[in-house]
Image (tube, rainbow, N blue to C red; front, side, top):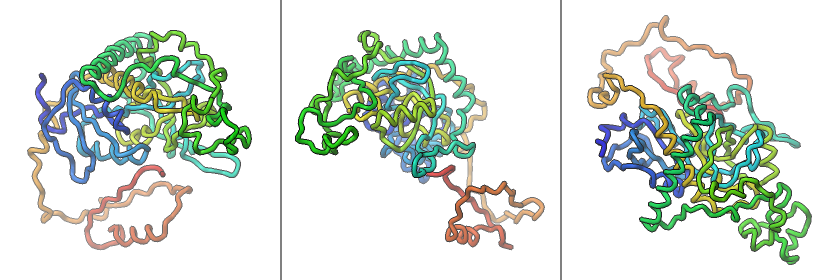
Length: 415
């Protein structure tokens, strides 16, 4: 057994999950848990699970809910409590694009890895269209160089083969552990016969009965009740299902296939095949998820998600556990491929033992030729809030003769 880390500063990798079922799948593949209470920084509301995967100390955080805001808040606090993190994996489930722009066929249980994240729901709504904000200030930044260098290896035949091979081994371990521990969650492959894809125009609605006036009201009419009923109960025609070439090899489907590409991230649970295909084509996306954009600019991260549905009206929860398991398996394989970084001889983990409070009695106001406000170009798109602006003018020391220290902090971007 490896020795537990001395402090939070010795943790290098984080795993972020939005749902309990995602968290459970990840925890099944942790090699060792650390029982020590490493605490958290002041003001950090997160609850952490600490352990080891391979050679790395990892910290796992479960968000209090789905969406970008939850992810932004949690990862900002995560970074304050674990300042030496080099990589965060946002791991869980997502909706997949059945056929990518490059002609790749995706099926349920496949795992997608991000090389870019697009906020497809950030923009302006006009009477006849939605315009996505894609200016430099509105777009998410490029991944850090060490993230780019790692992800690009999974676009090579050898790198992808090694990753998928290790992930298959981890998935088998997870499934056997489930049997040993008699877990309620079922991580087994649900079967190709349960992988249903319908044409984008074929809606999930009542087909067996004429009693539903709303569903019979027109081609696009759907009642609320039908959204909670299975395809079998509604009578969705099996003859309408889109044939998939990859589903013919059921044995190969039991192990995860990995695809690297652009992921769409938004606060919307997408349940429309037509919207899925339109947005995917516009932004060249391979999958849709809800947390990546929130974490992307807060911490160096990679999104690793298992496809549990096709983001259409026929989606259900039958594949969520298996998709969470395949994502967790790929995440562990990815951690094992992450290179170790040499530690400096004066490692920062000693700072928390040596830093002492400093008295401010000797502080002097800086001279006017040293302290000044840097003028940034005016943002023509800025929308002023007069009450907030006037309060800032009163509180900040820019026009004061007295010496003050102030920090103004706010979330980047909007939303």
